[in-house]
Image (cartoon, rainbow, N blue to C red):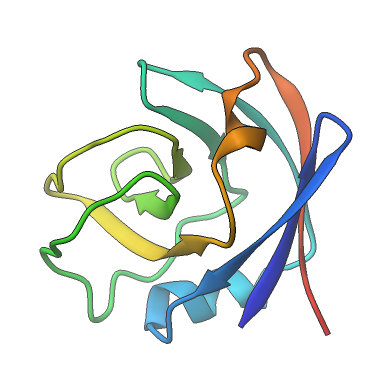
Length: 116
């Protein structure tokens, strides 16, 4: 499934994996959230409820552009620089195209919706 992500006057897309957690996220769309900086490699946005953890587990080939869910905090994580898998992290999909939209700093309104 493709989703549209919009913030800071920019629109971009991501492709969700076919997993229970990604399908659970898709069932919540559309979402109006707030995205903010966290650490030096990701932006985060808190969801209104927790996603299912069914079928989750360690993964490899971590890369900038990954869209993940962090179970302990209940937030989306948009990675724009290198990272490593850690316990509680579930990859939901990957951004299509580059990571440039994620490089703007600050707290911003975020819209996530399904593409038809």
